[in-house]
Amino acid sequence: MKIITIKVNSASDFGGTTADYAVATIGTEAIARIKVLAAVVASLVVYKVVEFDYSCILKEVDYNADADNGKEPLKQSFIDSDCATLNVTDTDFFWSGDYKGGSRWDTDSIPLTVLDELGDFDNREDSL
Image (cartoon, rainbow, N blue to C red; front, side, top):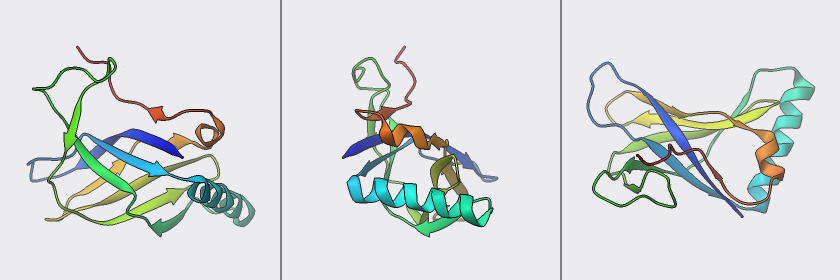
């Protein structure tokens, strides 16, 4: 099992509250599936394969909490999200979805090599 904490990018013309990070816990079956999908993308010579996947939990930075092992502390986001997908290319993967209300979000890309590394993956900013 691997816990991935990854930056969320939001595109909103209307402003409002958006998530800062997504946290996904993926097990050995999900890791194997991502690798298979990456191989399929490479063999079909397409940009990416997309499938519905709700393993990401959206989080916000908790500015009132102490640092979490030197990283920005997070709290549960109460922003509604829909249509979450896992996007797999031949070199990386990421999640994306819609905020209820119309704007989109996606995470930074994660290299496939992360799946073979020991431990979790956390790209949170260092706490100030």
